[in-house]
Image (cartoon, rainbow, N blue to C red; front, side, top):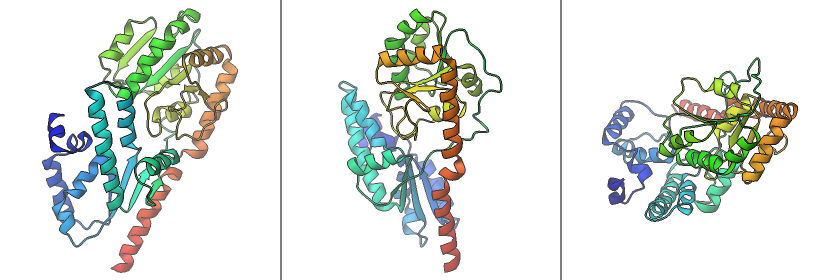
Length: 336
């Protein structure tokens, strides 16, 4: 972190930049004919901007950035929920990442974000440009699918998945346990809350002291956890982009209760294929509703699965970039 603070660049850039990878990148560029370069995440653009080979070469490849989400806004969210000195660090990161995002859209041909909500946010707060478009996320329904036989639990099994040292995930589960879990276990003494995912930090591990809370750490296969659960919760208070974990739960026909932030960017409707809760009392109320009405819970899960099948196939979601690359190749072949 100190190195990044001394450079005047964002920590997102300095933490993911190495001279060795730059050398490997330049070596590859100099020995191949490149039609297009796709960068995944804004920090990777530094390798483009620092490439002397690319800048001096005769080639003029199409530059494509997959931002995924508006990263600068995430740092602004962190700042609002923090105190000094970290609030200063997060503010600095927000400002520098915003500046870098503007540099990227000025140099790259096409930039993608994961949902229209992200595009709208980018245009409002970063740069109102025409080369920012939607490239949605998809899901492989052969990897995430409903169980053939649903496990019948006598009391609710509630699931959250994710990398458990990632700040938004940590904040979500800590908030849920501290604000909802005691009331839930008063109603359902044998209820279980499973937090499944790698790298749980000390805050998350400490939640295991609560009755019914389980922290798995790394698991080889996450699918059995989706199959064993009755309800998936996404109690996000910090979030950007589209939550893959929500799409995965949908694809497993698992009913989801989420904050509006956790469902942002997903074309779902509260009461139809998801339940939206705005505070602790609503989370508890919705958990009780689903637990007491298994038929309606199953219907919500089935509608969520149908949404995935109809709107979130990889073929459909990736068609914009596939078509763009095909057109680029066609133009290059015409010019040969």
